[in-house]
Image (cartoon, rainbow, N blue to C red; front, side):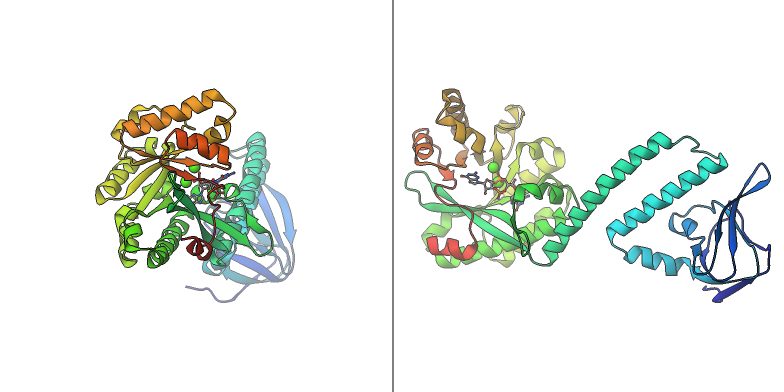
Length: 393
Ligand code: C2E
Ligand code: CA
Ligand code: CA
């Protein structure tokens, strides 16, 4: 229940004492209030507050007992601020402000305990460390917020990069790639922000948006190409580790796919080796995807340090050779041998290969001789918006 709006205090009247549970804060309308500690039965004043100042808010926000006592120095009129009134405002504040409130409160609590000599008496070093962590958190949260805002402002787009058949450079599929096109900063390189998304809970809503958008694009492609070409056309989608923790992933994936009238055999999930090694949930989910008919591609193959043994046990259909091999292979014979070995290994295990990052005719010729099934790179097509891709089909 909300207390009456005002409280009147006589001079020297105690409002609350150190250790009390706090149920409301106060704004001084008239008069002055002293905040003090009791140490060795002695009052130690720490602050005198006057009109317009708020106090008693700390224990409401961090849910701890009153860290100090408050008494009127003279006759006072105070305005109540209830927990609800205060918390409503704190909760509606943006993340940075919330973080700052937390940091400041922690600081005040620590200062208080230094003064009173109660627990946490020597947290100076810890304190410095936590300040550093907090400032990183501020930068990170700020960037996260900026990204999420950009997503809400529809600054994200899905571009499609052609994947071609090595034999005749015919487009037989696309990889869907996220783009952030900021009205003020232009296109922001995906590599600079994708990890922030992947490491935060944003990956779930944004991840589903990517799936939805990519499937809509695939549907538009199908409306353009022949029935025969549709049979083998593949959309590749990057799915990150955290998305596999969502127990609804397959159900939602299926729901979106069915809504667009697409077949599982036209959709390929791209994951890195890390996801495979991350745990049983991801592997089980991948097995289910595979048994439903989806393709599974290992991205950036060869850049991790994982054992090759997992390859025989995993439900894989494609290996993607990382660009770092492709760009070195024309000048470094050893790298070329590695590429040859990977392609041989993949084919031996029944997988198809995609050579990623092919930029020159020379690289294309080498990769063709080494018999990679498909090529994806700037030479055969950069990532482009749907409308541009449709013109190339
Ligand atoms: P990735 O999955 O390995 O994607 C291939 C990256 O290589 C893309 O960069 C593509 O633009 C670039 N690329 C393709 N051909 C060439 C080439 O010939 N030369 C050069 N220099 N680069 C080439 P992009 O789009 O900047 O994406 C970077 C990474 O961000 C991706 O690497 C992927 O890990 C991640 N990413 C992009 N879109 C998504 C997404 O929708 N979801 C998730 N989870 N990750 C994404
Ligand atoms: Ca990829
Ligand atoms: Ca890759």
